[in-house]
Length: 568
Figure 1 (cartoon, rainbow, N blue to C red):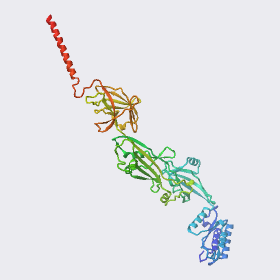
Figure 2 (figure 1 turned 45 degrees about the vertical axis):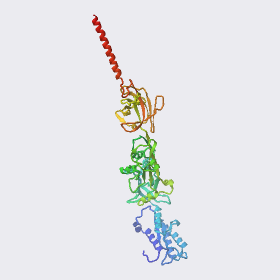
Figure 3 (figure 1 turned 90 degrees about the vertical axis):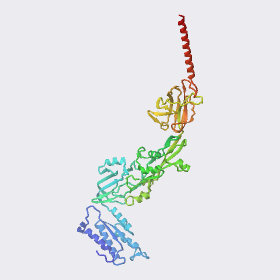
Figure 4 (figure 1 turned 180 degrees about the vertical axis):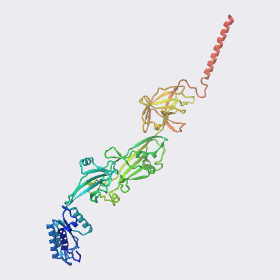
């Protein structure tokens, strides 16, 4: 058949009828028994012999089409690609209504007459025709479930009872569901020739995000050696719940506040809890450089990808560490560096670590996945899930500073100047429920130094609790005191009471060993004899007097004995 400037539609349909009537030509198209016969009548113009509409050509074309439909039970789709009608409403001398009647008469029915005005519409029409071809094929269908999802327990049980389905759990976290030697019928209207509903859920340890594909890129249907890949639908996955803890610490005035450690301690409490409400999800670990930047007050951003792919990033973690007390006071001086505690009180310093998970929005994910077959989430949120937004939590680290306190040992006896000496060598115990927790010994300045076993402990290392203080050994020359005190060591204060529950007042006293000033609580001892005044003669006069009296007594006794001898 040659093209000579006319649109001889009758000749084309005649050739189609000859294919059906000739056994040789029928074999050439590899026709298989049971497959539906179809003709696609495609024309780019009205039936003509030259340039105008030809009734003769049109009648002959309809006659050949009727023969094909009647004798060979074939379906005919008529597809027209026409120019626009002229100002008189006609195309090649024929009205639009006349042309439409011709095309409808050729087709098996009105629904099989279609027109196209662009390449895209033509493509869609051929897809529609192909999908509605009434035939069946034997195929292998493969559905690769994305590694961020898994089959529900119910679905696993259902598949386990079926012999036509094979489920494979892959090392990369994906799950492959395979239907082998499956009969796939042709689509009828909007009803697919084969379909299967699979229940899946997001994995417990997936943090979540927008536009997450449910299927892998290798999902598809294979017939013989030909494979047609499935599109990859996507959904928005609700974020897991973030959580972070609060901390507090107490220092004593003059101690070094190790604020550089606080960010790491707060970071250690951050977690995102899995759907079971108990298990913590692993989150990206900060590098040494990132930790250093965070400690210095910088903002650190760490991308998150469940699949560890730079081309499939779901969002990012944003970390911010601040000293809010300094910011409130309008200065950044030593805001995050270690420094000496100089201000006494509760909540004298406050540090905050804010961790925010920022999911990529749909537009960002769409751009990132533009070279894939991943589809944008359905507009119906009941199908695709609501778009997820930022999830942020803040942990607070509070710093309390106590005044230094100490137990000091002092004599009840004063010298002539009114000074009462500080006593060394006294031994103490701090007990909790009759159990010895710490032992103490007064040094040369009278300050009691505390020990846990053999190790000396600082005040800040002592466990906050309520203890009973008692003396176990007095300094040499002093009687052991039976006085017991109750010492309450809290986060923000130290309270010492006597046996009657009365608070004991402290005095300000400098420890010559440490050079620090303490709130000192004086625990007294009484000497077993009166102490001499500083610089006085003390007991020496009494000793000399006693010796003289003893000498005089000895001399008198000697004289008396001598007289007795002379008398004899």
